[in-house]
Image (cartoon, rainbow, N blue to C red; front, side, top):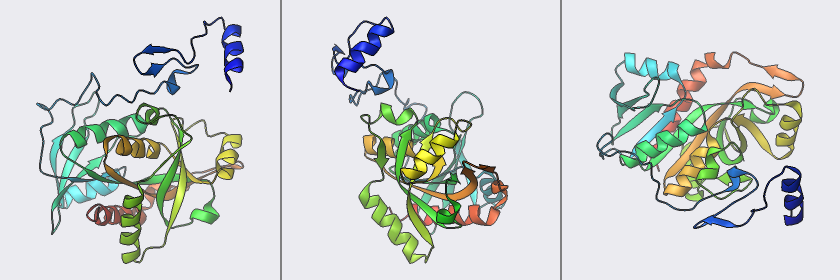
Length: 281
């Protein structure tokens, strides 16, 4: 949209034209607030170090697989290290002791805002390297099949990433991180794909036209966090990779749930791969 079109639209809406005008230091007033990016690294609201002090652990696997976490805890492979203090149910952060070092395991709440918040808190405590493992809706099951999926780019159809990076259509994985994860998956002889995913805030607004548009754009999956993870990682200089498996099928013809939460073998396998990958970052 050019400047004249913006002026006309705002006039029709009875709005004063201040688009492009600096109002607060480096922030420019735009037609849509989501586009008003501020590159200032300093925020008024910060992680409180008295609540979340620095710790020695540098690596974390973030997962959405409650069944896997419960099984690990009941078999004493992990133990609760602490809880994150947020409103509602407080997410547990677990510790997994591997032969080489200890890592954190976080069962993360859904959605991009919580993904960013969890990364902010853990990075303030000293965590520098993250691997995320979760499920996603597949836009083309013939492509994704039963493969492990490494998200290398995400279409930013959510809001959180715009608070960490300037407006753009996509955000990508750090290339050095991508290379290390690819090397790890190859060493484990995994059948995997590097994909582009569609990150959305509205799981019940995946309309036929949007699904078709995203597929034509090259997206293989749809989920709710990847763009936020990669945006926060780039903004804060963290290493992060997102591993997915294709769960439900999202297609113009309909939605096939496929009882994807019951795929215990895939979920446990993906979690184990995430642990191996984060140790290689």
